[in-house]
Length: 260
Image (cartoon, rainbow, N blue to C red; front, side, top):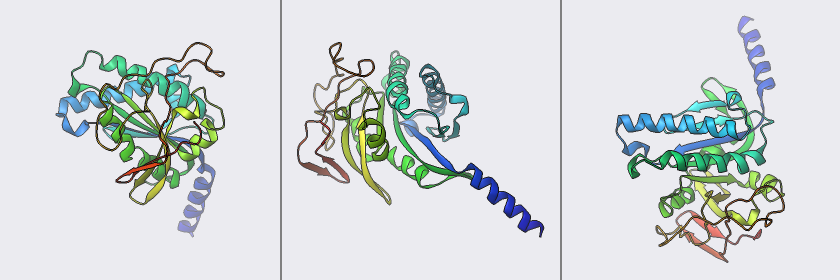
C-alpha cells in the first residue's frame, strides 16, 4: 500500500513536470588534449562566458537547469525563454565574448565551442532528464558537420547548430534578425539519430567552407552588411549558401538550401 502511494505521488510529480523546453548543449573543442590546469581553465571559461552572455542577452541563466559535463553542459531552459533571442542575441554575444576571452591566449588555450539549440518535451528522472529532445540536442552538438566547420575555421570561437524544428519554426518563419539564407543546411547522422540541421558561425561566412577536407585558404570573417540591409533587427554577419545539388562526405550531406 505504501509503495503504491509513493509510486502514485511520483507519477503525479512527473506529469506536472513534463513540458516542452528550449534545450542547449555546449561542448568545448580540444578539452581532452589539455593538462589538468588547462582543463580547469576551460571549465571556468565555459561557465563564465555562458553566464555573462545570457545575462547580456536578457535571458534568465539563474533559472536554467544546467547539467555540467566538464567540457560542456546540457541546459534545460524555462519554456518562456525566447528562441529568437537565443539565436540572435545570445549566440552573437557569446561569440563576441569568446573572441575577447581568446584574444591574449595562445592557440592551445583558446576556448572554442560548439552550441546546439533544439526544443522538445523533457521530464525529470532519477539521474537527469529524459526525453527525445535531450537525445536530439546531445547528438547535434557532436555532429561531424559542426566539427568540420571548426576544422575549416580555426579562428571561429563558436559554431552553432540548430535542429530542423528550431530552424523552421523560428528562423525560416522570420522571427529572427538573422536570415534563413545565412544558415547552411547539413544532414546529420550521430548514432541512431538522423535529420537535417542548420549551421552558422557568428562573424564568419560559411559559403566557401569545405566540409569535406579541411581549411579553406584565406577564409575570412564575414563583413557586416550595409546599413539598412536588414529589415528586422540590427545588422548581423553575412552568411549565405552557394551550394547547388548535393555533396556527401561520410555522413555529412550538403544539400541545396531552398531558403537562399
